[in-house]
Structure formats: structure tokens, C-alpha cells
Image (tube, rainbow, N blue to C red; front, side):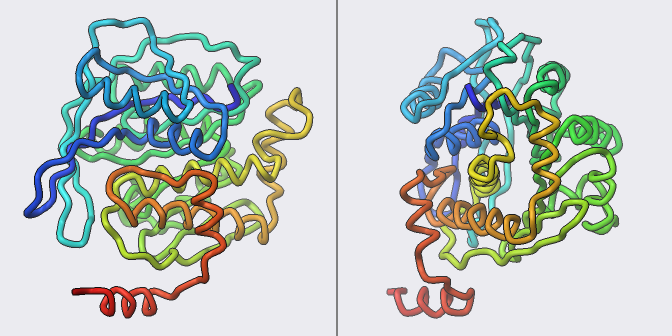
Length: 332
């Protein structure tokens, strides 16, 4: 497997004003694995799924996309759920019913070139310790990415949550966080200060998503920003996960995660990450924001496949004002 993703799979029960509840397969790490598979990558997901209807829904979707499912051998787990409440603008808030009890496992290191972890799977005890230990054990060969994807209701006390998040940061080569993640983890600390501290901890590339305001990429040498693609939002579920999958896909194409010589060690790939040029970072953000735009234009965590992403990248660029005018014209 090229990619190993570690973390939760969650059935998202989407609740919007005036319409019946709809269940969608979700969970941030599961969404990233699904997004990578839809973009054509070899990916395995180490997760926990129950032998129940929601588990069957999630399992069927992931397997159909080509994701290989791994577990820790426990048979008495239940599938986590999250009620996703959407406001009138499509913004999501979450209420969780989840237990994360992952036990340590030992994937074959020679098969893994990149590990991704984050969200509840990297934060909630007792499973978070196992997830991080697996990533750390694979670091000699594999690069690592991390997305805190903060869920305050499950994070516990803020200082402890920040300490756990920064243990994951210290193990990672690529970190992606939203502006809301940073505001919760590091209240009052400017984005540039947080990213500078994380780069100082050994991260090669930090990415920050800012919703409708776009995204930024930080390395030791460059800071690059990009606007969000203009789109009519259905809901924002899974947007950050689609962004993350597209980032990994773009880095793969730049030989920053999957170099021409498969046996090239992690340090060489990490050096390539640190040497990404400003134009390369701009293209990376363009691809990632386009993937997020496709996702928010339709219901649930539904990232683009490779053909859909190509079409999105080839479409004429619209400004937010143009998008708003078009939406008004199309309105009944």
C-alpha cells in the first residue's frame, strides 16, 4: 500500500431544516482514504467498524472505491455516529456518539510510503496513543501527515488537547489545519505564529484552510495563499478532508511523497517537501481548493474522483461576486 490512513469511520446523520435526516458515510480519516482512492491511489484504512447497518453502509462505500480495510482484531466494537446539524448557510456542527479503542498493530513497513492520521482518531483516548505509536513506528521509511480536525466536544481540556495535537505535529512532515482548529487550540495566537512554531518542530509543510477566504501554505522558505474557488454551497461536510486528499495527490505528482525510486528513504522525501517552490505550492493549493469546492457543491462528504477534479481545474475561474450573481439568476 502506498498510503496508510489511521482513524475513525463515522456515520454522519445529516440534519437540515425542513428535510428528513439522511445518513452518509463519514469520519475525517475515512473521508481522506476514500478521497485518495477516488483519485486513483493505493490506500488502506486502519479503522473500527461494527457489524451493524451503519458499519455496512460505510464498509460498502470504502470497498467499492478500492480502499482496503484493516482493523486491530477487536470484534465487539460498534460503528460511531455523528449527528451533523446544518444551518441555513450549510455550515455544519456535530454531536458525536463514538468510542475509539484502537489497539497497537504492526503494518508491514516496507509496504507503506505515507501515513495519514488525525481528527478523533489522533485525539480520543485510549485509541489515539495507538494511532500515534503506529505512525511513529513507520517514520523511518514513511512520511507522515496530520490533520487535527478539532471536535471540541470530544477534545477534553484545551491544554491537554493542544499537547496531544503537538505530539502529532512533532511526528508529522505535513500538517493541515483549519483556521477554526487553530483558534480553538491556540486562542489569541496569530496563524503565522502557530505555523512558525510547528515548522520549528520539524514539520516541512503547514497548510491552513480558511473556509470562503481560501487557504495558505507555509514552508521555511515560502508563504503562499490562494482564494477559495467560487461555488454554490450545499453543505461543508468533508470539505477539509477532500482538501487533504487532494494535497496528498498533488504532492505525489510532485514526487514529494512517492519519488521515482521507491526505496528512497523518508529523509529524502522530507527534503523534497521542504524545497517546494512558490509556484509548486500555488498549484498544490489550486488543486486542493478545487477539490474542496466540488465537495461543498453536493451533499455529504463526497470528494471528486480524478476526472471530476480535472474538470474542476479546467473550468473558468469565477469570482465570488460572479458566483453570487449566477446563483441569483438561477434562483426560482
